[in-house]
Amino acid sequence: NQDKLIVAAVKNEKERKDTKEERDEDITSIFNMFDKNGDGKLVTSELKSFLIALGRDPSDEEIQKIVEKADADGNGYITLDEFLLYMDDNYVLSKGQIDDLVDAFKIFDVDGSGTISKTEFRNILTKFGESEFSEEDITDIFDMIDVDHDGNVNYAEFIDMW
Image (cartoon, rainbow, N blue to C red):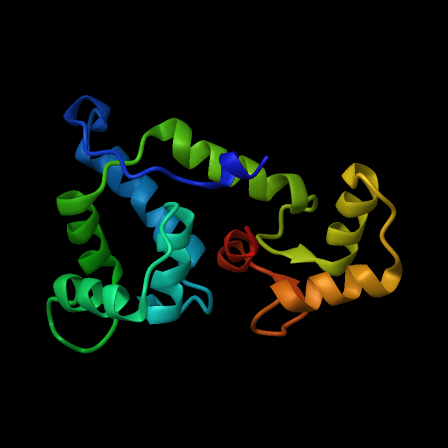
């Protein structure tokens, strides 16, 4: 269900975490999920994946404005510390919404590696697919989703597929 993959931006103070530490841990997990190459920086393409997960369809202009707002030191990318500050100022994600995102990814990531292999992808499609997929169909779909062509679908690529 693709609704489980969409995180809503919630501005209601009642949704705030009990402690800043717990909330920062959750936001750090989200940052790491969208930091496709694991370099500790969110670049515009990774930020776009994050916004899509929030249910938005951001323009390049909107993404650039967010980078300018969040990028405190002006180096062109967003670090974890900058992301934490930006999220504190702009979004509140409930624990349930974060859990839904992670759970949906884990359905595909059977071995718990943090990525979805083509084999895992094939197994889920053939197990839950409404119709039979040919090997060629599976390869075409997987290759389309595997944006960085490393043979695995990471979390951000998974979100982009929806």
